[in-house]
Length: 393
Image (tube, rainbow, N blue to C red; front, side, top):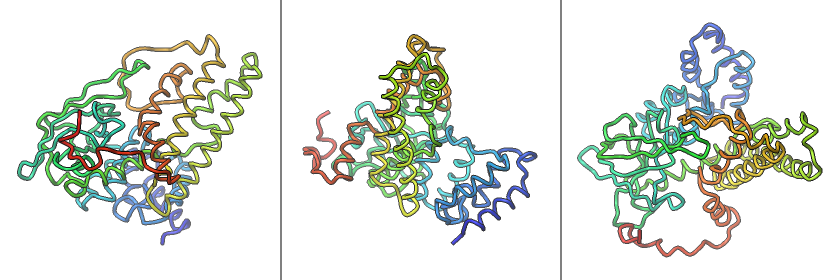
């Protein structure tokens, strides 16, 4: 198995052959992928060398010290955190070779076509239909709350292929080309004024069967890989101490003593400790990933992420008083990424309201933690054995 020293040697060889200062950014990233230094735990030929996931930090440290460019992971987070692990687990060799390299390099942005107007929290109730037509599938339906759809080339898509079986069993998983005829993306303007989310209409979109992931009708199981990785990507991101939302409010506290009160001090201390506990817990979760795929623990981390962001941003606005009510720009924009800490307190407060919805609603994640982590009895489900076509809608 590849060890830390061998990875350091590989990284130094990459830097010698492709000096960051004189190498085109994309050329450097492609060379890094081909050297197996993109995600070291992936197999050889797919951007890795089959090393333990924990050794990625060895490579990253060497590259950062040399001033090497990264792949702008915030911009391509859906591809990196959700599409890639699903393709790796369920994709054919041809699919892995086609999609993983441009995905990691950032040449192709991905989005996620899962939620629908009538199937948000109850995702398995989705109604977008996929009908077989020779070597292709014809897709009709609507998806909603789709981040990055306006800049994405590819999408991971789940659709109903069999309405005559219970809802979890009649779903199939596809890769959809967002440039194909019949794909229409419309912006959804949010309370922040921006439209980072979209609704996507699919009208007679043809997807070749060669872009199906997993078996026909097994899409729900494939989607669980995506969803588990999504929760880890949102709630288990690597942060330094005082990274994330707690950083700006701590900075304001130190620099603006005239704003301090005893009550705000107590609340800040409580949230600072909770943010640090969440940060260390996410580090432990990432270490657990070294030995396997993410499990339901990611739901707990995503719950903590949403609650803390909302409470911290609320404290931030209160601490600033009248200043906290200011908002810099309501201009309608369609950003490529979300910057939680680069904008003012008002933006953070408004944007954090979506944290308890995106990536799985708080209510659904509480059920997952209760049933799959704590082992509590499952809630009664009257539709478990009812064919999807017979469900009340």
